[in-house]
Figure 1 (tube, rainbow, N blue to C red):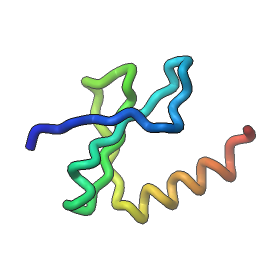
Figure 2 (cartoon, helix red, strand yellow):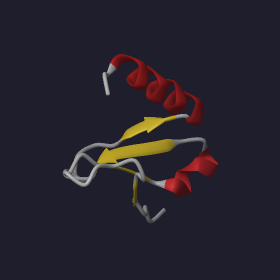
Figure 3 (cartoon, rainbow, N blue to C red):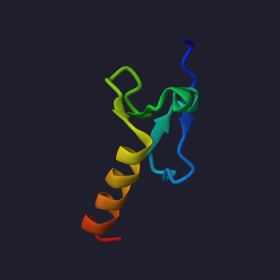
Length: 63
């Protein structure tokens, strides 16, 4: 599968960006990677796992 990465709409313009590969959703996987280092390994979440991860980050990091 040719992976097409999309930048998160929540990414900051200061380089704090993540990208995800939407084609994998159909397989039950949400891969994420650091856009500043695209050659590094990607994290792979289930959709439910990603939702739990996002909620945990939102509640533990001050805005």
